[in-house]
Image (cartoon, rainbow, N blue to C red; front, top):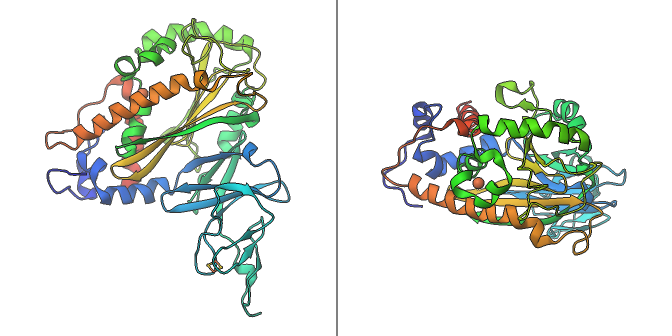
Length: 403
Ligand code: FES
Ligand SMILES: [Fe+2]
């Protein structure tokens, strides 16, 4: 990426930042800031890695990768899912080279040190008896199972899921997210800093101009006062279909001490739409224990970087994957009921249409955003009221980097 002048150091960028405004160019263009982002944020937060359903049997594993890190997620003999750094305790080779599979043990491809499903070192060839095998197991990585979704964190002191479980288990129960499967998982490369992806997801100020397809289904492209009557009308429909309309907001100062940040809310679709589809018609069998369609969609956040939109018949999970200061990947994961059969119960193209077309449009506007931000003429402008959640993300971000 070319910028016009030398970028100011991070301390100066942080000092100059004004809350309620976009970030300065250096936050989106400097390698120094990107490295700090990785350490202060990406390595501390939780990341959606897999569905537990993808590893139904003992020894089933998936490998999750983020930046330099690689994690083995495996179901043990006791049925528990655990995560381990994919780094051999001998001389550091990757241990598991497959992205998924099923094994009875992991054998390092370099010198064949062998690890059990619980990470314990079982065999270190030709090593003397004085090598303490008990201390040379694969290093555990923090791993939480939440409604069938496996999250990992690289932090040594990760935030807790307890408060989130206590508050969200009820509202989420009927969606049966633990009984879903991945219908499709797509990576969209975006030539932009990861923060521009997050900022974009967190506001619907752009939905009117940028997303004609989304706008046909979701009133949230309008201001809050115009959306409210739709949400009020949805209350009775949601109650009848077993859908929670609780409003739970635990981000930043509202988040209990030591807890992961989380939010849950439900907003109404237009009554022409049962779900997020092109024609408004259902796309797949109802999720979980839902009884029917309430013409609504739930916004769920597990941590700052795992937003999810839950319709009655499918859900979409978002991941913002940083690659370098100017490159990211936007990953979209579509979930349907685990018993739903592609072809007979849902058509994959119809299912994915809305969030594919919306993500392609987002990729375009985010890349144009990055191009403008790189200009010598760029100056951070004020945020709109509809960009409240983006401002909240920026406040969180600046606080983390300042800490
Ligand atoms: S690096 Fe794994 S056995 Fe040597
Ligand atoms: Fe968008």
